[in-house]
Length: 349
Image (cartoon, rainbow, N blue to C red; front, side, top):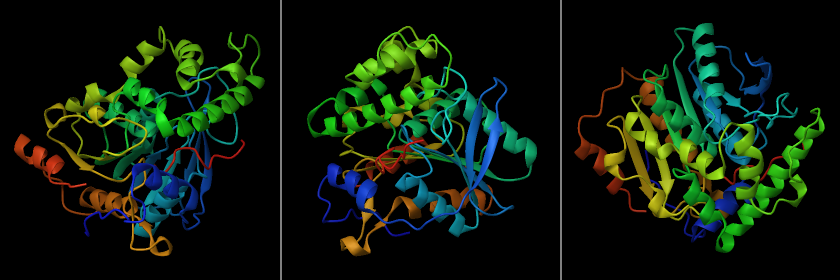
């Protein structure tokens, strides 16, 4: 396929990120809802593209993303056009209805993904299955792949992943990126208030509305609710970078060095990833952006071409081959010269 050429009229990562989230038009996609009960008494909100046959691609959204997010609409439309079935797995509390338990989701919570994969394989044992994760969802995906010896999926793609959560948070707290930080903090506080209004006391000890940073939210809400000692323990244990060397499924990582959500030093080195993992690192692209096209009115998402193209080798073509050497893996990273804004389009639940 045609190599990625970043749009000249989006000169930096902020422009790529904001255009992709706020100004890009995507084709509408019709989905059907599935309410999936979980063994612990909670539930997942799944959204399926039309179709009753063909390969299945599980899609994991980013922080506070949902079916309304631009990048989700775009990729589900692309998967449907390919003749595959896409299914968006809303993380707990990200669908229209607050989840039932005090716990919700976080960057290292892999049990729901594991349950969904096993369920789909039980339902359709001969159907080919792949997984795609954006941003926080990509971190969840890569951690799950790294901690699962024989993941029952054919391939995976992770886009704009915060490989080290501590470094990603530090980046969001600096400069213009504080705009994104404020936006996500507002979404997290709103989502938490909606959730805890439906639960019996006791509520979290600190006032959610008064929290001034995502780091504080993670320290006082995310960490204690999910069994971490504090925010530093949560970020350390949940960061996916330490799991990459254990991945055994053909996996593609797509990342931009100008991603305003994280610093370039968080990008793994070639020796840190497994032989089954490819890295495509570009100078420009922003956070889940990767917009190309000569003019704004003729722009498109390169991701929505590249991701299906990668998956097609494993969902349509002959059996996949194993990548043969570390030198090939290094070349995959070095030969490329160069998020949709997670949750920006999330509506009030």
